[in-house]
Image (cartoon, rainbow, N blue to C red; front, side, top):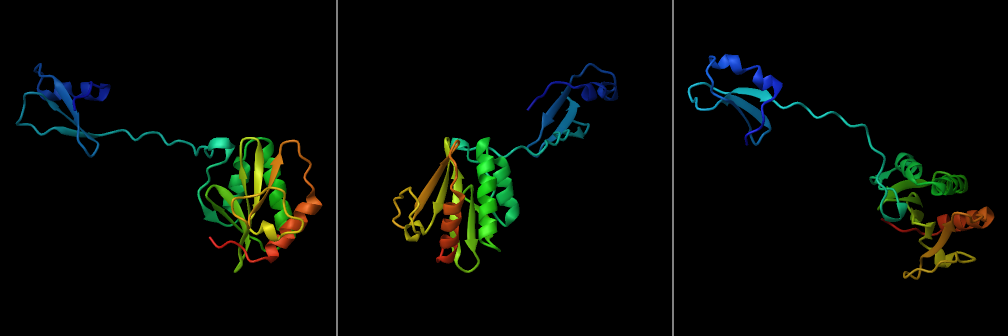
Length: 192
């Protein structure tokens, strides 16, 4: 395709022998810009590589609908901490507190990010809990919540799963939440 003349191309004009043949530049499919004189077929065109685009700084994770961070799946603490750091506004402090309670209650807890949510489990038993950001709340899912006493308040289409929704001004009952975490970690978990 023909492109406009640049300063670099214009400086090559005297190399054409001083005649008035216009200089042309075409871009090949592999991104190489070929510069030559139109109407001349005996001279080989000069190849000028395209300038590299400037490197961009790593961007913040994208927020999906409801403000849930889009984080690449991965195992371990680092992806979970990246998710928590990307949680918007007040939800970040809820995420930090949930993570602290889980780590304190279940020593050696296994962490992963899957489907843009942090998952917590016990090695060899599977995952017992995850949480996810929604527009107005953070949803904590207990995968065997129907077996917990008392049951977490939110029902699910899955008869085994129960939810706890945490809204911005809610006071978290940390004693009850810790009790649910302890019970959930002792049950066979969800194998992903």
